[in-house]
Image (cartoon, rainbow, N blue to C red; front, side, top):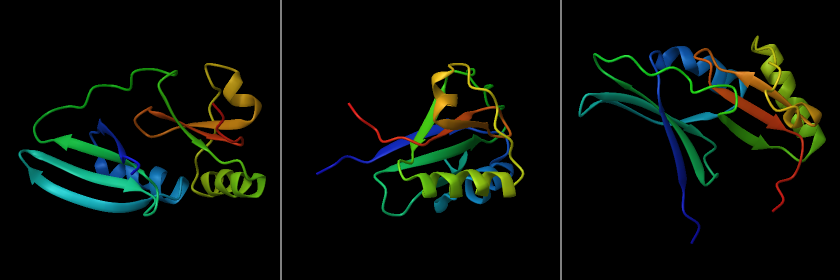
Length: 129
């Protein structure tokens, strides 16, 4: 059995994040919740993937700022056609790559910042240990 990984982070504008994560990255809304103990949230991902990204907003509170340019989520897309399609989707959605803090990510990938400054890398490589 493979555990499911959920990465959760706070946001001040849940609906404002949807263009980046859905239109740009091509993720799906897997779930939503409202006023769950004072939190609203959206769970994003791919239906068959063993990971999710959860964006939450605590009512009446501001989300902390993004931690910086080296705090990354990386999607490994080893198939070049799939990677090019992902980059083209980001372009069509109006998102421009940002220079990676670590030049490694620019060699075979593109780094994007969501509207709140959190960074996502589309890496044209296979994950190897």
